[in-house]
Length: 85
Image (cartoon, rainbow, N blue to C red):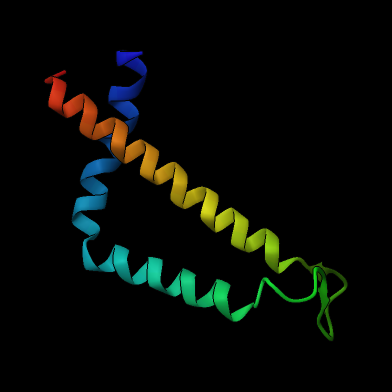
């Protein structure tokens, strides 16, 4: 497991550190966008000029899943760093 975690986690970590305020701004923008779609409303929304319906709840759950994955990856990275691997 160590060989799998090290390249993936250490590869993204320096990028996250460099992003700093930019990363926080992106997270804030995504939260504002998802909240603006009011995912607690109608399950499917059709927009004029579009041939497809949009599912705002899918966007909200996808953003939440991404946040949880990032939190797990960060926790694994910190645990690996504490162990000195």
